[in-house]
Image 1 (cartoon, rainbow, N blue to C red):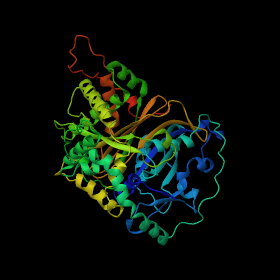
Image 2 (image 1 turned 135 degrees about the vertical axis):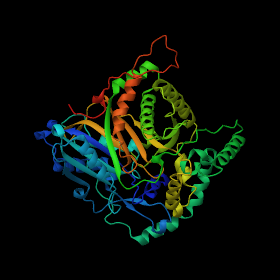
Image 3 (image 1 turned 60 degrees about the vertical axis):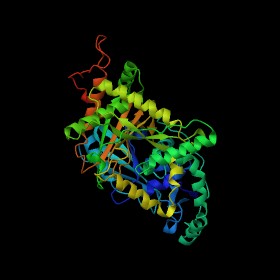
Length: 509
């Protein structure tokens, strides 16, 4: 048995009938490279069964402690059923990307069954040009971005021929623990809560206002400042100032969300992003975040919500050490950075983004890797679920300023072709979590020369979110326009009229 950390438990605590805690990857595959030129449900199930020793979480089942006295445990499921977790369906002709997006949104909008291991995989036939899609759906309580990539790495190969199956792992529990046994564990865990709290104080107090769950509380900045003064006195070092962000405005996607999602996919050429990076002397991440800001700015303009203040984007940052590779669970920080939607000129916006991200990186180097987990230890397990849900319900109140406006995440991926059961992986579109107060998520994953983009939003609030994938390409093109030497550095750069629509939507070769 393995106990969930407070950060793992937070993703379970946030779930309601409207809010789902799972993340998704949609893999577009060319089955012509597979044996027999097809990829069947049997082929996929056999691959997963063979690789189970590399992916132990696929057999982890949640065992909750009665009355929420302590955080739950992962237990190896004695009744694991591959047929329940790996399923297939088909799109109707013509099997367009728009049809795939709609089908993925419908599957994504259904919660995972907590009485079984918290994952599902769907093999989707009938995609245009003879392709198939593979949709993975795994709960965020089990994985973060890096451990999710490790799972995909266990299922993907460097060649169509694959690799030998690992040695099977024998043993494991022959039954699930009873409620009485879990109650006993919970009671034994109660005395550990004050100890966890005391161990968390040195890391959490000086950074109190950096944690979203506390940053909205009145006096959070004063608590953090007091903690930094105490820390400086104990270490006999100068007082470190806290990080100050603009107060974000409230937008329509910062309210209460529905249970239904709108999901869209897009692609951008990585070489074009690198050309812009080299032209302006910034990083790939600077370019990605800047074009996301430009895209969100266009949406706000269209809906008459554009203000003079920057939005604040939540950016997940992995703090997983090399020793923690393969341990799954969550090892992340959630940090805020200004998304400069208030700046009209694309180049000026890129420069401001570069400065904001550099300042964020500098500040984050001073934050303890365990900050989120330490901060969560301030809340007793019995109150954890209610406190987490109340926090996000509070931030969705239109009369209050949100902590963050949206999520923007850029995840580097492999730059070589990979194969799944012999089928060539052509693209992989990431889809992540939205919740009350945080109703828009843009996640970017690089793979084999492309940036694959997944955007998820509340279906009722942002029904036109599909326009954003085209705007990403337009924003990238605007940055690719060379600046004339005689033009002042602060002068506006006008985008070319020609629009590169081919980069906006995935079109398999």
